[in-house]
Image (cartoon, rainbow, N blue to C red):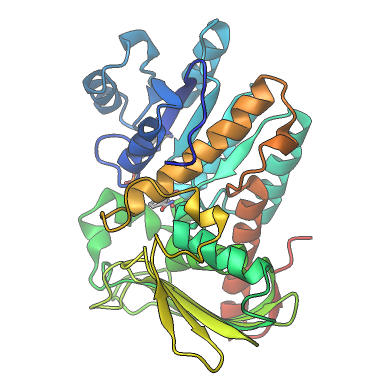
Length: 389
Ligand code: NAI
């Protein structure tokens, strides 16, 4: 990988949530180990303390660093000379704010799962607190770690698409086409407004589609008009959403988030159309980007295409043609964050480490977007402001 950097000692990392039964915990563990920039040394892995203890033991952690809850973890780790420097938070949505606040107040840097909070004011509060405490936070929009997403962003930045006119993005799968919440812990909290934060599919997957759109175009969405449905009997929150988007520099957009799109497998895709060219990317074929310049034959860019921008090339890890994808995208975010954090901890000029990772502010935009969509849907699709500031 051309992205390699040297580190004296791995960053000491603690995990909150992500236990044996969790969906996303393993992706974080793979990502933190991938380039050896982190070492998992502590955890409060599970809401069930005994299950968490057993799991921590199976991961090889020292028994005294497997905690029954995150408060104990912060207190004990803060008293150790070799205490954790950075923590990953991957618990149900409604717990993020309280847990993140606790860590930031203790001066521990964070990688926080999305949606970073369930209310905009909480997200803004975390941003304020992180600034005050000089704590660095990433929000885990892992899909922006794909090389071809970096390529798409660089193409827009370089003007290769011209003026961006239309953005269409979707994260629509069929995994919740039946009442899965009756049998799965993860689906149950997502469908309970108290734990998911008043939205199911928008908070769960729509926010990823939004982040890709803003990441690639460099434009925030300032107004939304949303239409929500809940198709599955007994479900209280939306399992399908169509949203019209207005971007701040004039582009027009559309976002589809769904859990009932049977036949779509993971279903994350984005298409961007400018005045000079269009591009299209689908996560299930992540190493290809379809590029259609005006008046020319469309072509598929691959990871070894000569016209790839540096931002994409630097993320290649194996010879093109080998399958690589989701886990590497997650790892790319972790590794860039490690480089920036290491520079911060060693007092180096961070401008020299000009790397991209999704920030707390990106997370706050995501929360505001979800809130605006919920409000718009309640108002039968009226246009609602989604401006964070
Ligand atoms: P899950 O329900 O599968 O797992 C949650 C884990 O957190 C479980 O191990 C549970 O015991 C533990 N937990 C719950 N409360 C806790 C507490 N107070 N202290 C310690 N542990 C606690 O949930 P899943 O799917 O792993 O999602 C977790 C978070 O990650 C959510 O915010 C979700 O939106 C996000 N997520 C992000 C993805 C991404 O691509 N970035 C993909 C999937 C989930």
